[in-house]
Image (cartoon, rainbow, N blue to C red):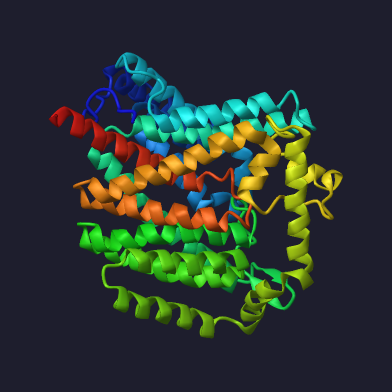
Length: 451
């Protein structure tokens, strides 16, 4: 296992030059208020303050970048898309982190997780020259660098202390609450998608795509809140975790996702399997399932019953053809596929009856990135599961044990729901994996120093 170099408990100091720069900027902006419109000056001031903060404290920038993807401000204020906030945060934070690593004479790239992500990104680049639509694959490869590679690298390399690690873990609980709560809110505010006679939540989510993907991410976050509820030393946080769990269960039902329903059943099974009191756990799981089932809209129950009649369901049969198309894409170019981002645009050319994505995260990677891509992809997932399980079993920190078991159960559940959904490249699961990788590296460093 890769071990972080240096002492993770050592915090970086703020250079005096940065403090002098902040003072100089303050003077310049004070004069600017006399010469330019207030809104312009305030906007520039906030940008500069954020830039200095992220340059000085890369950890703050990394957590802000992650929070941006969970909070999804563009869902509520679409005009923010023009500002390219995520690109600004990533660029400034990465610059500050690189400078600090160089000044500290530390490696710019550490850990198996960061290296594995770079390997996946390298496969994407290899697929571009052979891609069916090279321009589209190039654009998707560059985009993945921002929300995939950059996020993983910034999170892994910026966490320097146990306190920061704890903050990141607890932030996941808050993000789970926000994601579930906002999904429930949009449903009752009328922002829904209509499928037959069923209104479904999650359609207004620009970051996640559709209700099915929303359900998958919410389910992944649920077990983390579950284990944090019992193990977080800060008792007042239990209210946050409890509310997040309740809203998560409601939100999954409101999405009307059949894949989400199967994921929920599997999640309850996993939690029961890990419970010490099997009889009590069985009653609780059945009670939760029964309450959700009998209070759900009738349209939801009818949609779930259709799972057993998928041969008569046009949507289900379309997915069968999409999966067959993915295999044909792989056979067309077994090494690197048809190029990332090209599945939807060329699905019909490979035998599908509709232009949609694969609805299967494994086959999507197989079709777009071939054997090389699926190999690295599975390595990342399986290695993360192993590290999470080991963290849950062996770490002495109760918060990190909760992270380990929560990530293990949540990621395992997502691997099941991922069979029905195209969630291969979303950043949410990879942030959880990054936190596990950092915690595992810290634990391994302590073990080696003790021996």
